[in-house]
Structure formats: C-alpha cells, structure tokens
Image (cartoon, rainbow, N blue to C red; front, side, top):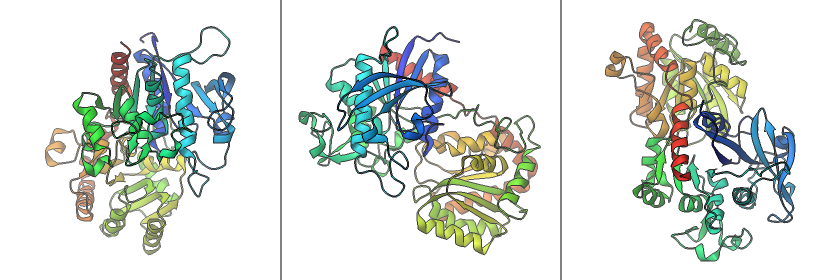
Length: 487
C-alpha cells in the first residue's frame, strides 16, 4: 500500500451512511477509502444536520466564525464508523426537521444560503487549516466539491487567490443551485464577477456554474455523460461551459464505483441466503423469498425489480406502458420507490389488476432494496438521462441483470446481450437502443427470450457478477488528476 502523502477535503451535502437521498451519498462515503491506497488522505466536510451530529465520535472544534450568514458557526472534527469527518455546526442553518434540503413538504427557501455557508467553511479550512489545538492544523492540498451545494467553494478560493487547486464534480447537472443576484452581498460574492463569463446565469446566479467556471478541473461521473453534457438536450443550459472546459482539456469523465464491502451478496446482512459469483445456487432461495415478501406467484419468466425515484427522468411512464405486456408474457415485477403521485397511482392500479405478478412498495427501505437485488433476475433502469447510475452496478454485483437505457453511465457499464456479445461471453445485461415504449418493450422481450435458455442466462449472470464495479480503477484516475493539480 502506498504511504499517505497528500490531503483532500471532500465537500458535499450528504454522505453514506450518515445521510442519504441518492447515489451522491454513496460516492462521497466510498471514495475516501478508495483513495487512501493511492496516497490520498481524505476528510469529508458535511453540514451538521441533527441526525449526523449525534453520530460524531471524538468531537473537537477546529474552526469557528461569529457570524456565518446570520448566526454563529463552527466546524467539528471527529469520526463516524472510522471515516474522518468535519461537520459544519450552524444551528441557524441546519438544525431543522426533515431531510437535508426540505422539511418533508417543501424545499427550504434559504438552501442557497445554507450551502454557500458550507462552501465558505470549506474555503476557510483550505486556506487556514482546521485547528484542534494539538499539533499542526489539518490543511488540504486540494478541495473536491460535489454538485451545486459545494459549487461556491472553488469560487471563494479563486476570489481569495488562495492557490489551492479544486475539482468540481457534477453528479447531476439538472440541479444547479440558482438564486437571485440580490443575494451577492449577503453571500460575500463580488459584484465584479456577475457577468456571463463569471457566475451570472440568465440574470441570476448558479452555484453549479460558479464551480464549473472557477474549479481547476471539472469532472462528471461517466465518460458518456461528459460527452452528453455538451448538447442542449443534456446540458440544461450549461452545455457551453462544459464545452469550454472540455476544449481546454479541463473536463473529465470518471465513472463511479460502489463500495463492494457494503454491497456484497456473500456478506450482506440484509440478504437472507448469502451467495457469491462462485456459488450462485442460493440466489434461487432469495428469489423465492422476494416473491413471498411481495405476495407474488411464481412466474414462468424473469422476476424484474425496480428500485428508483418515481419520476419522468427515470422513465416510469415507459414502465407503466410496457410492464403489462411483460407480465402477460410471463414476467413478474417488484417495485420500490416514491415520487410523482400520478406514477404512484398508476403502479398501484397495475398491482391491483395483477396482484399475482406486480408488487409495489411506496417509500424507501434500504434493507429491502438489498433483498430485491438479491432476489431479482432483472433490474430495470429506463432513465431518460443518468449521469452514472449506481442501480445497475448493484444489479451486476448481485446478479440481477441490468436492463437499462443507452445513456450516461448506464451505457458505459452494461454490455448488451447481442448475439455477438453472447457468443464472446462479454454480455452483462440489456441496452434499450431507442428510449421509447416500443424500444423498452423490445428489450424486455429479448430478456424474456434469453431467460428461456437457462444455461445462457446463467452464463450472462456469471459475467455480470464478476464485472469490475468497485472503486479501484476510478480512484486511481481521481488520484492521478489530483496529483497533477497539486504538482
């Protein structure tokens, strides 16, 4: 193992297992451990949400400010399950009920202030260090900002001429942290940078654009998504900034991985019958248990699982059009998720019509999601865009063959079960060539046909389960980029 030589401060709004609303948290929680063998020591700076602060061990104040955008604040250092953490303790901003962004019904109206404060604290620690009164202060060699919530950290460092390199990672460009120009002074942003080549975005300010403009490098979470972001269909108004950074050689696509110590069907405490790529026989028992848990009859075809937010982006409307035909052809489906009320209603109605073949659980249940990957034959991900996606990686790891749209990281991580790839032994799932109801129906029909040949199905499942889905390669790419910037 390479000795730790450099320090990186990772700045984000969520981090697994502390607080999670989506894949961002999994990435932020897993990357530090993957970077350590590459010579990088990490600390994660996160808001001190009440449910997070309670989990911090060895809490020490390492930075403080009397008035951080409306109230006193400090940063507390400690560990959670061995992960070194820095928590921004600002009760006037983060001591609230609900999730990290909302009270459960509506987004907090001052989210731009809350996460500007997080970015400001990151910039201060990068410049002056985190002081706990014992020895030298901890000061990062590089700051890694994740999504718009950390987007102003590169800007604050740029304005201070701090000389600390920064990397801005876009997990989903659709969320940009836009707020009014009347907030510039409040958030300590210079008016001289409020223009189209700076932080201005259609007469307002975009925290994500600010980070993209001011970071030393910009990355996103798959090679294909990096290419897609240069088009208006995917760039959400920032395609010009992406193209500019790409043309300067400052835009990189690095695919996400998953923490294979957490996502391991052989050791997963949520999996009732442990199994592995070397012994897949117990997967059949997990399948039977999942059918029983959802009250489904044994299908003649594959059992598909859907674990997702029920939104237009995730292609749930296409599922509602195609699942009836899939079920009629012998398939079954178990759904876990929540979101658009009309999609929730449509899935409940489908389950009411075919209770033997369609099961729906509204909400989110982490242990259940693990059992679904363990019991499923297929995992369906027909997203209209998907920067990277982790669902398909969980499916590969657990032998639930991913059936995915040909976009972003889905395209980069799943090898389509074409006749050529089946013959070569490289197929790991199914790509939807044309993202429409007809295209999804065609991919489902291909899966149904392959499932009839159990020998071929087992061969694809074996290839899927031995596919590299961990962080090792991607962490090396991040470490190389970080080292280049620090040099």
